[in-house]
Structure formats: C-alpha cells, structure tokens
Image (tube, rainbow, N blue to C red; front, side, top):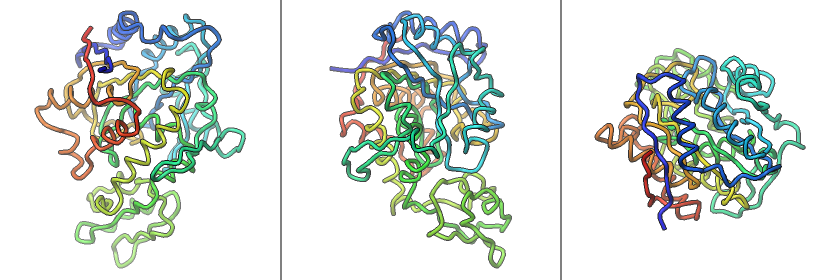
Length: 356
C-alpha cells in the first residue's frame, strides 16, 4: 500500500501570513495530527538556523503546527540538539539565544523551546539497534522519552548528504554530539594542493585544531579530524572535499541507522512536514543567506519519512528539469539514503501524492 503524502503548493511571492494559512489548511484537510490524544508528550524537532541564515522554517508556521497539537490536548515542546561544528549552536545557552533571535520563543510559538545539554549524562541515552555500522545509537533523551515526534524540516541541499529532509532531521538531528561524531567518523577530508591558496579559513573554523598551514598549504591531521565538514563548507577555493568512494557514502547509511533508532517504538507516532521553500544549495547550518537554487515548491506532510523525502525530491527535480542536488554536489547521491531507509523498513519510496 502506498504511503500518502499531502501537498499544498507555495509561490515565492506569497508572504508569511499566506503561507501560515496554507499550513493551517494542510493540517485541517489532511487530519495528519488528529491521532494525537490528551496528555501525550510531543517533541517537535526542527532546526533553528545558524546565525546569518534565513532559510530555516519560520516560527509563524511552527505556531500553527503547535496550536493544532495543543488543541488535541497533547503536551508539546519545540526542540533541537547541539552541533559538532564551531558556531553559536555548539552549546545549549548560545543555541537558545540564537533560536530566540530567530523568533523561536514561547510567546511566538505558544510552547517551550528546549535544547538539552548533552554534555550531561541524564540528557542522553544509548539505544541498541545492532545495524551494519551503528550498534548503539547515542540519542538525546528528550526524543526517546517523547510519546510522539513531529519533524518539521526545511528540504534543501547538503554538503555531505546531497539533500536533507525528514530522514536527516531524525538521524543527525536527534543524535547527541557523540552520535553526530559517530556518523561523521571515517570521512576525514582531503585537500587538493593545486586549489589551496593557504588562506587558513579552514584552520580558523576547525573545532579540534586538526588543520595547520604548512608551506602555504593547508594540511589536515586525520587522527584529530572529527569529520564535521566545517572546513569543506568554509573553503573559498573549493579545495577541500572527502574521498566519497572511500567512505563518504557510509555516512548516509549511518544517518539512516540513527533515524531507525529514533523511530524505534514510535513508527505509528511520527509525523513529518517538509517545507520545500527557499530551497538552497546548503543546509541551514551555514551562517549565510544562501540564494534559491529552485523555485519554491510548497509544503508536504506525511507519516512516512521515506515517502515525504522522495516526494520532495521528485517535485524539485520536476521543477528544475534535472537533479539539481547532484549537479551542485557531485558524488553525493542523496537518493542513497532513501534506498537504505526503505531497505531498513522505515518507509516506502512508493507514495500517493494528495494535492490540496
């Protein structure tokens, strides 16, 4: 049986209030949150955006979603986790401040905004999954303890996974920093000397000081590197990349295995929203205002994380006339995550698109 993916189109010229009303229509017509019952604890997982980024899903839209959950009598928090890379989202205090600066406050969304400190053991938990790469997934406890998870995702490109949507927000997004490290491990970047200008931007941003400048060229210490990809993103000469064939693809499968850990025991109590609006080359972790790479598509909702990501990808590919993500990120075939997620039973790539 095909999974249903509900879809409502959005145009670039439409303002926040118009799009918020479309979210309201999507919820009403799809009834996708109507399974929620009184007193269930719901964690709404999203990405609050790095400083300088504007691609994140707007708080106005989260207000509509959270209000609908509250009307079902459920309890809800709006949550995210801390990052590996250097920036203001590496610790809970600064992360909460930037979330507030981007409009994610209780006053704006109607619910508490929570970013657990995963340096404290009581906020983490290990989930045994025994998968090919990941045996024990290290997750933030809030998402494990929640009765239901609502993933609100900005569907866009990604420097390491080709594109990111529901599966990435689950697998990478609900992991502790140690869990994120486990997913990034074994993919230390390489530097193409012929392109490297020795500008040291990579050395400045490296969170573990694994990069030095030697003979006017950057050099990476593979033993120190944690694979966070910050250097790849910041290099102005595009001189840094990973050897994709030597292990980069394994990251996609590790991420999907982590997604399976998050969904363990909750497969019937997960809902996903993909906002295919302001679709950018890179993810919302980049501290800049990335331009669009594709016309705005719309908002999708589904109970199936594989179907919603497949549908988002298909709609964008149709609008662009080509796989824009693979074009911008050669060697990073994001569809591999969909293939593996289906193999693990997280959902189906075969779906029914219901346009509202």
